[in-house]
Image 1: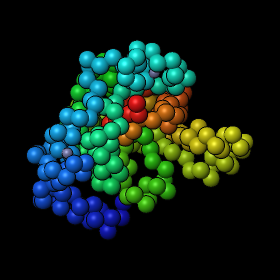
Image 2: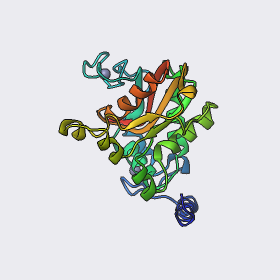
Image 3: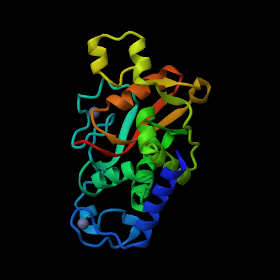
Image 4: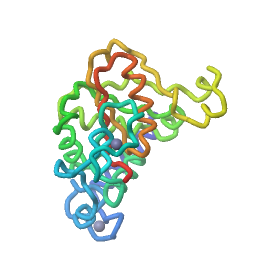
Length: 238
Ligand SMILES: [Zn+2]
Ligand SMILES: [Zn+2]
């Protein structure tokens, strides 16, 4: 991250902390800074996936125990704090602009990791951002989430083992048209297999949509000897 960018981010964060926040959804004021960008009412209207929810035991899709759509996905299990809507959606969008996880989001995430099966995690690995995008954005939002969770739960954070290989490198290995369309397959590589072998990896990302990205990550982590790959995201698609 360059210095100007660091200063910009710092300045934004100070502004957010110093001035009362207006809810980005309903424009009412946010009662507590721990709620981040949305007010209490908007948080209440956002669906949080508590342990009372019936979810697909593998991919975490709500309202069914076996969704039948996730068998092919390489991870052991995926869980999200809630549905990608309302306050959670806005929190995810904020995280793309500022490297900051509000306390409320942090506690939702740690609640998820304290529950089975994610409670078995031994090492936090953020999903790597494409190097080009990392350069323009200045930070990886998955790393910010990973840092937060690792600190709160005292789990080691590993930002070096899983890397995203550049698109050019991927094309050089000779992929057909179909392969190129599938942009994530073959996009990840484990740089330090010795750090991954035998571990229960907590793979962290911002949003779970189809599971293609996290599955591509899980595939190489398991090939490198990971015992299990648990996926944690702030939100997931319905
Ligand atoms: Zn609101
Ligand atoms: Zn499923």
